Image (cartoon, rainbow, N blue to C red; front, side):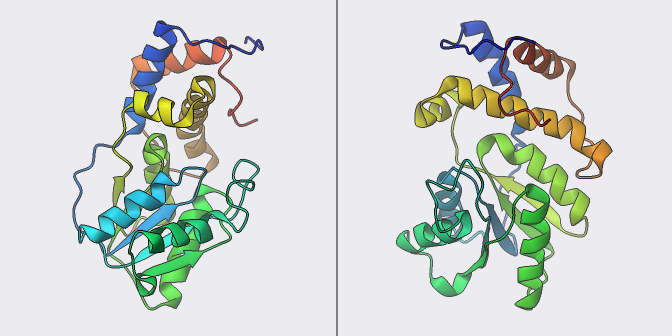
Length: 222
């Protein structure tokens, strides 16, 4: 495995990243759900998308979930979920529609702790609109079906192409590292009991293997 820090991305590497990006998208048709759960991260677009879905009438209740991590503490010092709530309020979502779960430290926590928040509020949904970063849809879906199999799960994200996301983040190497890291978790987490199994097409697996060999490894789990 290469350990050299790459400063420029080749066309071939970007094409491999696009295969993985497309795989991470679930392609669900958006339908009304009982609640939306916005998973905290560095990406404020999750909160924006969740607010937009509320205004479109697809949900009446929202849970924002997430504490802090090394990658979000500087941007969201009060915690991911708290900042998401504040952003949604700025976008016109009424406070009574938003619940906050401020402790989750991983995707399994996001789901199980959000479920507990809803349960304490007397809300027992049959369907959940799961709002994530675009490249996290599949992992979040697989996790939700493992830890909360009773609900119907529909995935949503900000509508962005890979190129649009790369431009927004401004660091192509980091974005590809994140795509690779999420795919590793999609592959490995089922045997660890964290998620359900997902089929990975051969061309997606080959793209992953190539990118790992080429040094896109900073977000791989140890």
